[in-house]
Amino acid sequence: MGVVALPECRIRMPIYLTQAFRPFFPLAALYTAVSVLVWLGGLSGAVPLLPNATLWHAHEMLLGFATAVIAGFVLTAAANWTGQKTTTPASLALLVVIWLCARVTALVPDVEWQRFSAVFDSGVLPLLAAMMTRVLLRSGNRRNYMFIPFLWGLALINLGFHWSLRHQQIDQARQLITLTAWLVGFLMVFMGGRVIPFFSANRLQYTPLQWPWLNWLSTLSALLAGVLVVALPLTIWAGVAAAIAGASALLRLLLWQPWRTVREPMLWILHVGYAWLVAAYGVAALLHLGWLHSPLTLPIHILMAGGLGCLGLGMMTRVALGHSGRPIVAGRWLVFAFIAVVAAGVLRVGSYAVWPLGGISGWSGSAMLWAGAFSIYFLALAPLLWRKA
Image 1 (cartoon, rainbow, N blue to C red):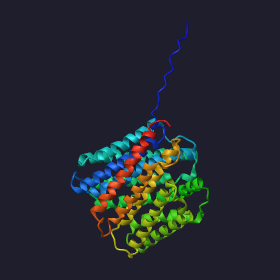
Image 2: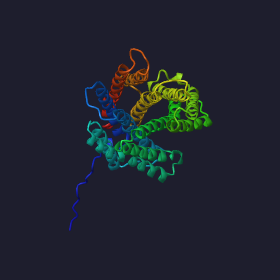
Image 3: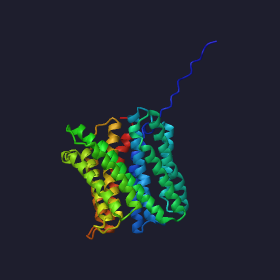
Image 4: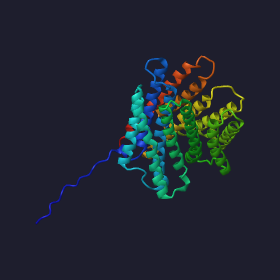
């Protein structure tokens, strides 16, 4: 009896499910552009706003946008750290779909839809944390074990935030979202200290100075300051911790010699982003020591509109180009996006001052520049990331 050879059947996997940055970075860019414009529309009265709309905006910037950036970065980087796959196409698709469901429902200005959003959103960080925990423990990659408590901690904080809103514990929800902002700041200090001098040295062929004790001081003081400005606001303890974090971050930045990068957009955007972190901790120190009188949200907007905007856009661009096999060079439109996101941070922070671009004028200009910068990223890089090089 003869053997019949069956035709070989191969399932072609979409390119955007092969690496975590491919779906997450373009979607993060698109979402932050849309959500900021929705927020601006709500402030102008063009679209309805939810109760506690400020908390909605803060949550979507941090646990919507920033979480997607973190997911795309750490899942991609961990594959290099460990030499193991961090996701399968199925698990990555599941994570992306849950994140998308949370974001789409979050844009609907209806309380019932927000409950659906909270359910979906509560699953994103635990799934991400489980993925990272599995690969880090299996590989014994102790150098990056800090991501395990960090991601599980963010997941618990996010659950606490949704529970607080559900039970109208508004002050508690505000504290939790503030803590989240400072924890993201800590992550930027930590990862920025790793990658910025490394990328600068490789590209420009010089050796940025790094002192191990300073790296530890900067990272741990950023973590301590983030906890204390929430737990013990307007106290000497919070002020001193923030001052140490700001001073050590400034010293690190100077040792990296950022002036060497002025002709390299892919580098200066990262150094500018780290400078925003220095400013955020410095202003927080002045506020909590009582030497500056301004809303406590000022350093948070320096941290997020400035630091996260520049470091997020810069790292998303670098990882997307490098890991997709393309030259790590910012074209004209991406350079324009870098300039726009820096300007967005300046206007948002400047909106606290009394001048023609203070208040709603500064907010509006900042929102449009931010949306424009990340829209350029989406339009320029999504087509590249969703097809083979």
